[in-house]
Image (tube, rainbow, N blue to C red; front, top):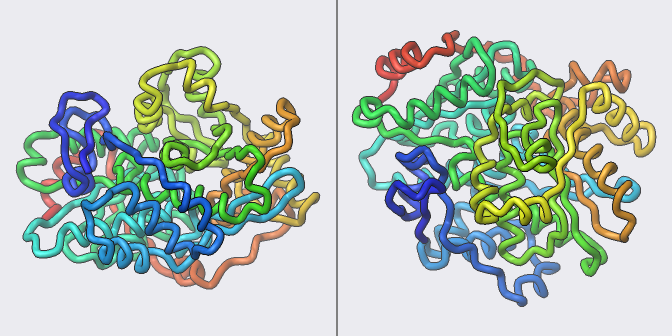
Length: 434
């Protein structure tokens, strides 16, 4: 399996190097040369598959003979003891992607990536230092996905005061091989520090650096699994299939494009963003103009310069007309998001987080413009309790807290405050990495 950089300057690499390196030296993003279509028999037999069997087929299709089947099966088995059910809500479905240990969709990518990277490091004397920027859920998913994995240390950068209390507790209380840096700045500052570190020659001579953000291809491949699982659960598979994706760094949407390339009959991908509407403006104008992110109640989507935009461009060969044909984009403010959370609860007695509410709004707006019968699926990206301080004033009650969260809430926060200048970050890395 060969991968190339979207900037087409760095040499091609195999999957192992792409996963362990994370980011190409030319600051592009790794993409596979080939995303083969799944055979007709896969779709004919998907009804009889459990989630893990289906995931094995999809990943095997991606990597071919690069990994032994037994290794693929072991990685999948260890990563997933949870699924992603559909919940009916009138003319659409919510797909619950928060059934994993940290109650967010990123468990699908992070747990898989931790096990794949662990396999690649077997019988290897390398010690890998993972640097990851988070606007919320990535941090907790990566921390739990890599906790205790031998040969790997994870450093998580997060913006001070800009993640929810529960999100922060989930990745600042673990210890062991997980370190949290509380950056005085925004998510974009955190992401800039990580990317700059990957390009710093001195750091890369001293340490083996990698990433667990969605810039790493190992995060995106497994996120395609739940798109197929949604299709598997549909009663009438002959209808057009639309997905609305709450979008920040656009890794989740890119995974959907991978699924489409593999043969999943997706009609439209709908990107729903908050006030950080850079991609929406691009779809409407053709101009991509990154800017500093603004804080919203859907904080995990507060991204002003989405990295995976360049994978979307590459996927469609920089053809704006094709992108606009396949992807629709809408943006919504906080007030509208709150109204949507209340509307869903009043109509369906169903609690949703603010990110899912943005996705719901995107799908409803699309349905106002398209009257054709279809299977319409909103990706429900996080359990509402993770944003209890936002949900409670809207719904008038606190969502029930799953048992696996209660332990994190009671633990002591352990984080290291740091400024947002690269020199200070580099000094910290030089003093603390292995």
